[in-house]
Image: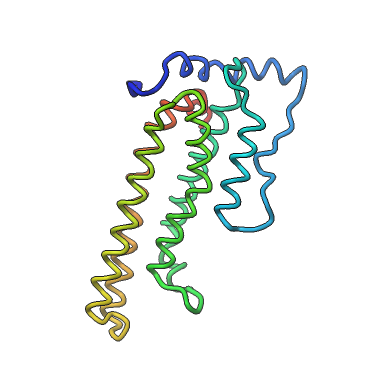
Length: 205
């Protein structure tokens, strides 16, 4: 069932957009700039770059709008990356570089999702989700798990985990479980977000 905050007229147009775009593209093939990102890994820079591309490429009210494709691509790729990262947790944690910690790695990784999700939410707020309800849900989820990370860090620091292999291992396991729970909740959000914000994209995978 469509979320009441979502514009049903835009939702219907987005569902039809790929068919219309396919016809248009036979006449005038598009140039895809979505992967043309800055040559650095700083997520804030990448986020701003993607938002600039959205401003350039999304025509409000267009029947062949690229918006559902952009929204769907960023959400899906972001969550897919989350699943892959959680699956490689043990390997990554076992090979942390100097100065890195399970806490820093976990929080840093959650925050890098912004480079995918925030551009998608920016695009959604242009037409289909004017109130930004899905962005609010994402930010609430993000804050909840970052706070949990901080709670784990404070608890084990007070217990002296840095001086105990057993406590350090317990702390790492807590972060692993937290990350798995975060991915599960993120996937639930993804399912609803793609249904409501990018109806045509969900048909592609």
